[in-house]
Length: 469
Image (tube, rainbow, N blue to C red; front, top):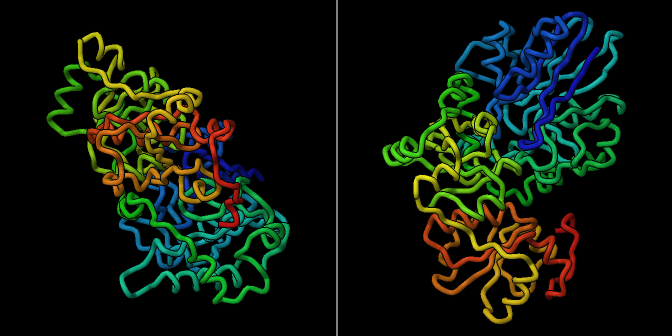
């Protein structure tokens, strides 16, 4: 028996490869399916089933492509109604993979079709459960993504989740391994642990939502408390996962096309494409195309793309580090952004050689900020999450979380200098790029963010543990 978690850090997402006696199954595959097909081919095994725990909102699954390439049926649990051929399993239905058995446990709550898959070893013993977004490590799936007008409320879905956990998952043996669909960093939960697998027994001790003496009312209150609005791209990803999408090969071919400066400019003008610069923070600060938006590949790239660009059909042109165009297009496609039209061949250097205008971000070290701040008295804007800001911040700074930036533009100075920072520099550079694209050129980015500022004597608020907020 082989059970392998294939974890993608950028999305905080876990897919699963299960193999036994010449057969394999894949659970919640990513958009690009070659890692699964290559693994099966190397082991000379047949991919027999593609299991989906639910219609994912935070990424586009590879279920359709994998089924087309292997002939394996797509399996959903009860209540699923996809627009393509799939086997809708009954609660308790069993599937054989070699000498192993996978049993369907319908666990609604996160969504109404949410299903967990219980794996039995060749001796018929419960070995592991693949919980999708029903149960995370340290948390449970948010119950606010599957509402249908007045038919289902958040409280209704939370109630279903309570019953699913108590009746289907918690009665299992404590040594059963829990394999969730996501870990810390995903927007599908609130308090996920950094670990990506655990025993059910430990989760009963650690997870607030699995307290043995917890009432249904307490569960609903605690699970629904503090939910922030989901990213705007979530509904469109659900639609793609439910209705279908174009081949990843077509997306890669179109998006990985090298463009000359002239071609790049023409396409930008004709399509009103967003110019997305995915290089490093430092490279973008030194020089970039005017009005381009920075979201670096070496960070939480895909989630921030989905959070900030919003329209997954928006045409996109890329400025990329050398050799990373296909990676950028692939990672965009994982969250449904399939309309990439190509990348600037030769990058920023080719743009300069053509005598084109270059913009830059005024980004300064912490020491320089301290030396000039008292003289300028410019306002400081902290673009971290509210919980980070409340935990500890520079006194007299203002908090405008990056994902809410467009809603608070009126609060920013029009002419006077102001300073931006986040935790380490990634998010503040994204914010700087957005603001510059909107005509704010009076900003100064603080390099190193709060991690650097906290090492200085600049006045700061008293520290409060984020877990208590």
